[in-house]
Length: 177
Image (cartoon, helix red, strand yellow):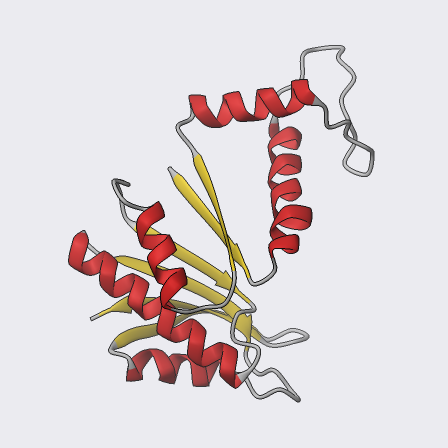
């Protein structure tokens, strides 16, 4: 399994994303009876032994982690394509809060459709699940505009979930035709 994580800022990947992956892994590990563990709200000592165990588990499960930083664009599409060369199975792209402005919405929808089209050409296809607010007040992005942009690029956007309590949010499945 290959997992790719992307953010515009490399510091977010380094200081938030990667540590959260490590913490999620550490929290899910079985603990021997009577062994001192760490509490959800406690501290986790990250040392060479813990990192080595993490890397060993990833290798044993045949999981590869890829991290991508930068703007949405053709270079990003190329990096994802290179990273997924030889990968088996269907591509699933997940995105959250990526359409917060008209400019971000346009560039993300273009990149997403290029990635899905490449996947369709090279393999059986793929899909994306995109979660976002229905409307980003003050900046102009919206889920409706995103779905329209996907359709304009030849894709199919189907809303599969909507939260109406509090800030309205939705999850949309995106595929190629």
